[in-house]
Amino acid sequence: PSLATTVGGVPLTSCVYNASGPRSGTAAALSKVCQSRSGGVLAKSATILKQNGNPQPRTYHAGNSLASFNSEGLPNNGIDYYIAAGTIEECMASCDDDSKPYMVSISGKTLADNLEMLSRIAKAPSLSKIKAVELNLACPNVIGKPIIAYDFEQMKSILQEVSSAMKDTPLKLGIKLPPYFDGPHFQQAADILNEFDGSIAYVASINTLGNSLVIDPHSEAPVISSNQGFAGLSGQAVKYTALANVRKLRLALKDSIDVVGVGGVASGRDAFELILCGATAVQVGTCHWTEGPKCFDRICQELEELMESKGYQSIADFKGKLKDWS
Ligand code: RRO
Image 1 (cartoon, rainbow, N blue to C red):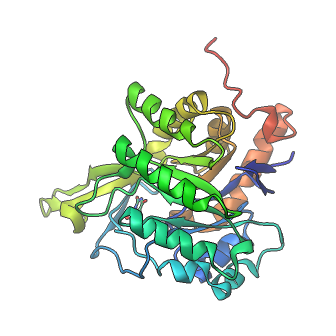
Image 2: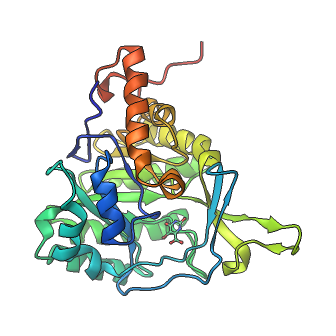
């Protein structure tokens, strides 16, 4: 069977690729993603300037990758690093697939920062090598800042400015969304996103579940030092939230906006379930973090075996075809 797909019109030979975040902050790490069967190479969310993120300890894994926690606080090398010709070359040199797309993620502290980053991307000498920009409206870990996509007014005005700033570029725009939990919130988010059909190529759903808390009963204190211990929750525990978010968004969004599923994918079965819910591709975050880039080879192989056993030849054979309860 073939795992080939497209994300917002960008072709991927494999529908499984890395999420922005874990092991995506340096060219060395991204080059290992490129060497694997990951269908694309997506860089860590960037700010204008390099920053170190929150103090350590800022991550914790419970039960392997069942539940993971991070309060990283956007450690990254700054946007200029991720769009530099040398970085992209180092990331992509090890790919045997020349067409594997390189993508960046931006997570500015303000709208002005996001617009500045977009303008730098649009002027980058290597612009033609950057296939998509994922605008992260869902970071839960910037102390003192809310999750933008929970503030629908702010989300709409950011999308207005960003979509007009990207109009004359060849870049595809993706939007990284937080998990929603209430019917009306899905509808409000989808209504806003649908106003930008034609500008938004895809949404990636979901980012981590914000403001979870891990306690150490010995010290009687949080395990994570930053942000009073509050952290984003990821890993296999959030797959069920991701499945519901992908399903709800796929039903509510216009067909021209693809949904990329992300959240708790650790097996071919997980990928299969998200695609059934309507995902055109799936990203892997926590499992990539705990297992390393060989997870892409394993998950791709498991998905192929599952498709084979069901007689499916392509992603289109089951994408969005979740059946009614019977
Ligand atoms: O760096 C982080 O703290 C972080 C980001 Br930008 C994000 O989008 N999601 C997350 O769980 N952590």
